[in-house]
Length: 139
Image 1 (cartoon, one colour):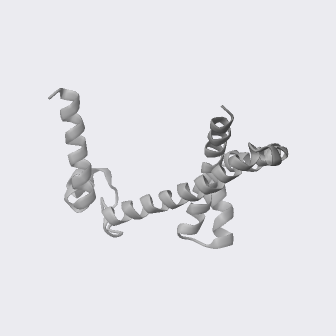
Image 2 (image 1 turned 60 degrees about the vertical axis):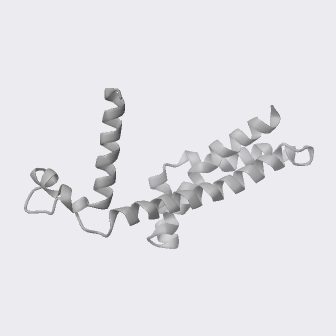
Image 3 (image 1 turned 180 degrees about the vertical axis):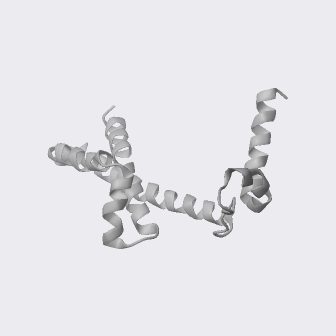
């Protein structure tokens, strides 16, 4: 086994250990804290939080894929070709604003939680999926 592979396996093992037992790493991070702050905040099981975030990303990616691929198929057909400029403009809006700005607008509209994150990830994923769909169907 090469040194690079050994380092990768060690890093993976440490990541898995940190996800399963985050409090056991508290002594490592304790010197980095100030004013008696806890080195690791106990906001819940880190593994369940990571899986929840992964689920949010997957839902947003699936929604972006459905919309962008559908739109890409529509504008590559002769009957929908006239909508290509409008479609490009609409999907470019998602890339124009940074996700933090989308969150700042979405939070007052839908509240805190998973919904504004889904909106930001959905908008940010439209352009690359749409452009790749259009390019793939044209070539």
